[in-house]
Image 1 (cartoon, helix red, strand yellow):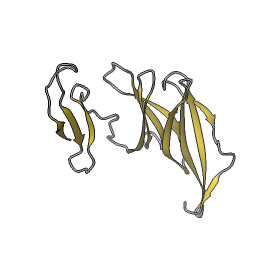
Image 2: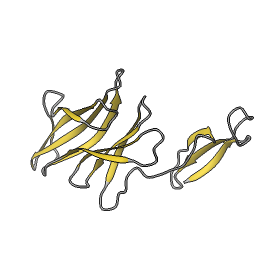
Image 3: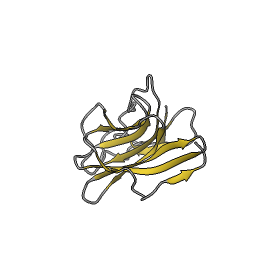
Image 4: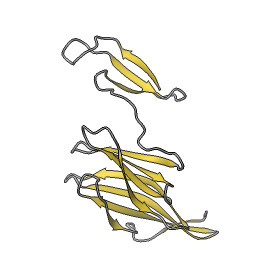
Amino acid sequence: IDVAIQRGGLPGLPGAGAPAELRWKRTSATPWFGWEDAGLFSGVAPVVDVTGGTERRPAILHTRAGTTLVAYESDVGGQGVRVSSMARGETAWTATAVHNDQPGGAIQSPCLVETDTGELLLYHWHHVFVDTTRTDVFVRGYLSTDDGVTWSLLGEDLTGGAFTDGNP
């Protein structure tokens, strides 16, 4: 990771003078991120150990309660959706398997939403390979009322019918 100074200034706490602002990017990437007060950038750590598996398409949500959630596709223990969370003040991620699929299907593109009441919703595509020429695709949803610790199924088919894809 490359870290650069976006704006020069004095190190230290806010109110002690104009603070320096930092930005960061992966060495091989083009876009820069951050530009935050130097006191806010505290480090970088992986969300999940990907040894022996593939995790992809993360969706990130920081809840009003202060928990950071990352939902992602995972093929560890069968393809499915996992949610890793870290509460405010914690230093380690916890992972929960929300859904593991049976053979003959695929899970894709998780999305996290926080409602006005603080409930959390997780949606994702569920592909069912019907045969070699057709795949039916459903939207599956889950609900958490405890800041992402546990999830309950809202429905297997929230759109009232499958989308059909001609490609398996």
